[in-house]
Length: 162
View 1 (cartoon, rainbow, N blue to C red):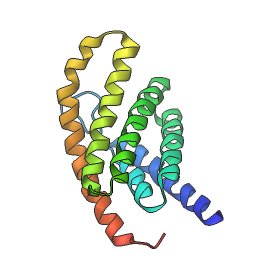
View 2: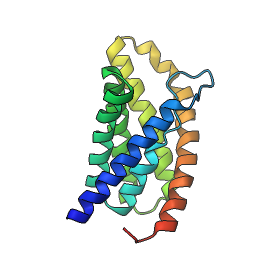
View 3: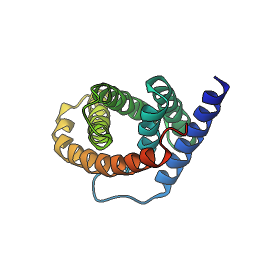
């Protein structure tokens, strides 16, 4: 039990570092709201190495802490909605045990953007914003693909060491 708590603390610190690094990277291609999703590496690693409860806990705590440290209340709201939908999709797909890490990560990236866009439509009470979904789905697919490749390689290298 103490060992898992130490690992969770380490993963949470790593996720916060990824959030901070991502906030420093000027990643902008004319698409507002698109990020690399570096912290999703940590969530995917936890999902595949320690379990769903641990991954969800670190994801939620990281979103709240990063929102207070590097964002604002709206960033917390949007990130929680995207993070929850993303986690749910990745959890369900991983449980099938038929899909690879990359596919699970792509689904997470796509659903994260979908969750954030739905929340934005609810907050601004303007559903025309949903026309933006093809752009965000494409961005979620691309970033989820690369995050999935990185996560898969890390999982292969650390194996059952945790």
